Length: 353
View 1 (cartoon, rainbow, N blue to C red):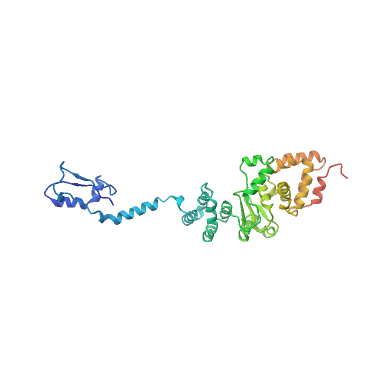
View 2 (view 1 turned 180 degrees about the horizontal axis):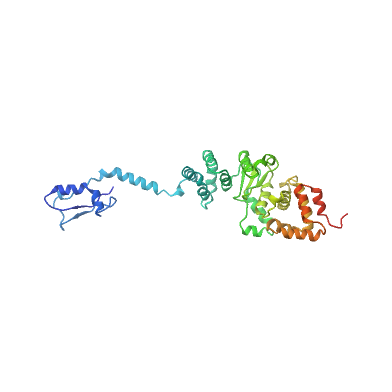
């Protein structure tokens, strides 16, 4: 550590000089200098001392341990957080803030400087992910999986980036507003294993998950996050869930079958442009069949506005204008109840036998 400046007064009482050297703290308080400034000798006389005896110097080696300690502390405090692995930053946040750590962790994960390598390092850190799951609220844990873009492999699913590209290319005329609003599946989906599939399913469906589990390959939860099982579905599954993300329809809670039929209709438009084999014909085949009949009544652009732009009232009006004497509510209820025969019949042209 650097020495204080020591003022020396030349007189016969050498004990005064010794005492001055022994009281650096008192001199610091009197504004004579700082422990961090180089030694500067001051003299009450304009002439320097004629002998070394009149200059009292403090051996710098005596302060070395304290200097090293301060230097080490300073270096530790000044390490940029960007040089600390993101996984370590998250671990510290969990230790210090517990349940309140999610917002900070989410901000780290979503930062522009966060790379795919950073995210994979976190996901592959089994110990850290176990700590994350035990510390965070279940909903926050699930949000973090999609923020980290979990994509379990091996899988035959397309990447979210590929799905967005295909949907935007082949449905651009229908999803312009959605694209302007930044809707996309990238960053909002997780491809998961059995354990996290059940966690996400239970969080969304509750006690009904036991019945749903074997019937779905993917789903979008109430928070707008998509979940896909790594070993279920086909190459069209990611596109199907992306279609739901681009949609603004509120039918998911009020009419599941109609919602899925509309999503499947646009999914097959995209898949057929690339490779029809991407989508297995059994997926939502009844819902799709009825919606295809509905398009014959209201037209595809009207269906698209209802599904992507919240224009359900336009579709209802178009249906009732064409199907004179048939109420939309009757068709909607037939779809809701899974009465495919009745739903298709209500979409038949009025002059049909």
